[in-house]
Image (cartoon, rainbow, N blue to C red):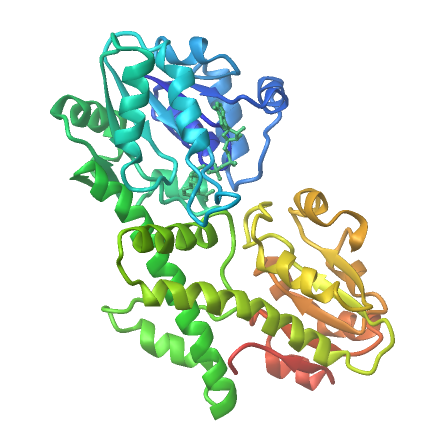
Length: 432
Ligand code: NAD
């Protein structure tokens, strides 16, 4: 099949590479010329485990193409996937559909023959209807169906999740469109559930899922606060809870709050849509507020650890919003650093992958180290903010020798508390 993907970002690129690996001929379109130039020159534009190898393999096999031209990508396509961003609206608290609408209008005139237009971006409920109207208006002759094909991949695991999705949700009102999507995902037929629902249900499933996960994180963080007061250990509590099949073990890791390009904006958009429809969503509301406060609480912990030290040197491990990605959008680490920078502190940070994207947000407000040990040299406190694997193997003797004050605020519970205490560190984890 011939597939065009509009938007070659964290969703569009792994999806394009994955579909090419299935054997489809894929053209990834983006309006950012520098991105397309880079991809055409064989240089990958984002980090995802395993993506680069598959990218080169499929380019060489002649199945994966890049262009800035809608005409080039869309006119031959059986399926056009829209994967552009849906950031928060600058004024209202809803998600902004302007890029989705623009993509629909720009591609409409290039549709040829029967085409399925699949909306993969996370979109407000009813956007499928709007896109259908926009395309018809621009190109009344077009023969097409608009479907909702929400994306559930996790950044950091995008390649894994593409090939092993828990489910593929398809919101389609036409049998012809359903048949084409089945063909698109044929290689997954034996290993995943394809759920066909109404278009508006598919749009809602995405927001309902992300809001639920955000609530789960907020809940375990509040439970961690409770454990700290009562002497229980959140790790043990989460394990005990997670063994209950009704609860499940995932998203029960207490930490510095959720972040990334999805949960913060999707919870806000969910709440906005609920209010627009006069529906109360107290849990989503509480998760949003709790998550905002959470990052302030983490900054306060770090500042408390260096209280009384003039211009303390704070070492930060981790800038990305989670491990396995270079994405710093709405990263708790960035927000916590932002809080810390309200005070006279010096921050030196290390992240194995996210230095460049963090620099785009923080610039020279902080210093960037090349290794995790360089970051802690002469530090008064070490704050661990992202759960990168390499931090787990930190050598306590080395830390001890390098740091000026032996204090650790481990917001990800990565280090072994007993080992750190045995090495004379004042160690504070989360919920234990
Ligand atoms: P992104 O910002 O990384 O990429 C979007 C790309 O679209 C950009 O490269 C931009 O230049 C391009 N673009 C915008 N308008 C365009 C146009 N008219 N024509 C061509 N290109 C255009 O965004 P992302 O993280 O990939 O997210 C895309 C969508 O997927 C969002 O709705 C997001 O909520 C959703 N989503 C993201 C994730 C994730 O983990 N990032 C997971 C699930 C769903």
